[in-house]
Image (cartoon, rainbow over all chains, first blue to last red; front, top):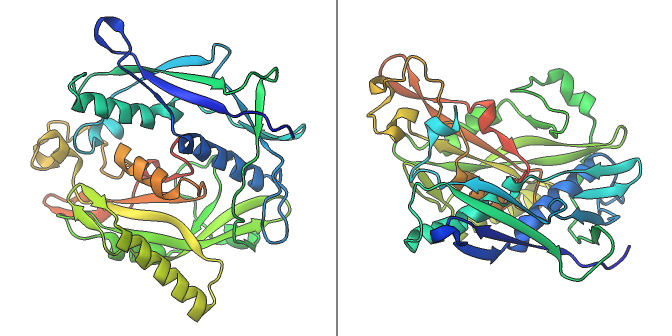
Length: 91
Length: 268
């Protein structure tokens, strides 16, 4: 297993005036760690991650791949209503 | 991301929505700064790069983590007595909830129609050796104490977590429940769907006849809460009890719909 560098992630909001970026910020690593935890757990469930008798996982390493070939991609979001948005979210 | 190699490899592709919660945080700051209007729909771009040049498209990282307190178990011991709730997906991991837990979780979390309430779902993780599987068994409810709540908001405090740890420790010492762990959280949504659209209740809503809305759902705030509390526990689940318009005038309590029952990371 090589001690290779980890990926870093950044998010940029694009709706600034005259099309300029509004904000750009590094993504905290716990966002990525949560994804990693779920992949490790999936590996444990399937017997891919060997478990010792006490349940300690023997980790074969986790492989990360970047965002597509271009290393960047665009999506969209909006804030939820001030209160919980039931009719929209449950439709 | 992937783990394992060859035939024993598990690959999971995370879509851009994995970053949506963080994009919403940035958007909240931008709204507060007056840079963008509250209802604006904002596009965001995600970048990824390696911190050092590498010829390998993949990056391998070791993750050190505590052992899961697994207990030996067999799915076929529980399956014959279990009733499935909602659509089943082979990628979901099985969670078994004892029948008595449901009414107990209502008692512990339902604070009437004026306040949200919550409770911890306690149980064990079981490991089946062949075929390999891990499943959860939720058998105990502990009320979440030390919370502050409003009708559409529930905040835990340090006292809430201290109380949980104290109760779990007592169960370990006095009852020998050494492998129990919090497997999730249940909270109430004591409001009706139409109230959030400005109606007094659903009877005044013009969509009443055709509406299938429910207040049994996970809001964005609930999802953030779940990620913050159970970020390193992808086996944890979240359950919501919701207000229900019963007959013509009374409010009751309804089990959450399957769509409001979520497990695993909110980033998936």
